[in-house]
Length: 244
Ligand code: GLP
Image (cartoon, rainbow, N blue to C red; front, top):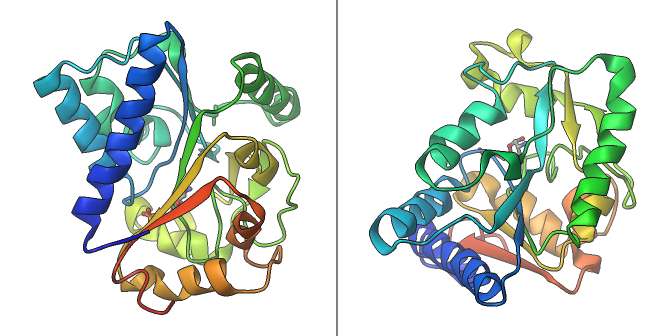
């Protein structure tokens, strides 16, 4: 779906999240959301905050799982995805703290594998993700599933691509300060979601969007795996769709 601009597109995605939350509320059920970081979803989160403040939307029945976190990373660091999520969303809504899940960047290396299995299990125990929202990196990564990621991959520790670290260098004051690793949900984890929405804005995403949507399905561009999914929607602005 191509929208005139990212503002209209973001509102649309936010509305779908709101509808999901309300539908679940009506049935006394929990909404399980997979959330993403980066510049792309910021306006979606702002709209959810507005809906909470101005229209009384409650997040008391919402459980969230974030896609990824840098490793190593302390939660109170400026660049952590924990800081990002609290600043952009969690600090401004009535979500219960125990319902928020973000991969832990402070683990000892030897504990990561068990932690990742537990992260997957928690999602499974809640009946899986109702909706996963995604951005896309210029390497074609979703979450931090870089080129070479397997389609059935689970939550795990990964090595970041050089281009991804370059793109993050401004946040860290130089590429040398960007962690070389991250913990990410896998492509397989993402695929299990009932619904997936990948968002992209601006011309700088146009060429990777062309590859993701029209290119050959291959681990070289992990987002191409989404072509195999019936329940994925790409939500684009006209600039990101300009090479399609
Ligand atoms: C990071 C995140 C991804 C995100 C990507 C794009 O690498 N781990 O989840 O999709 O950046 O970021 P942006 O939305 O800022 O373009």
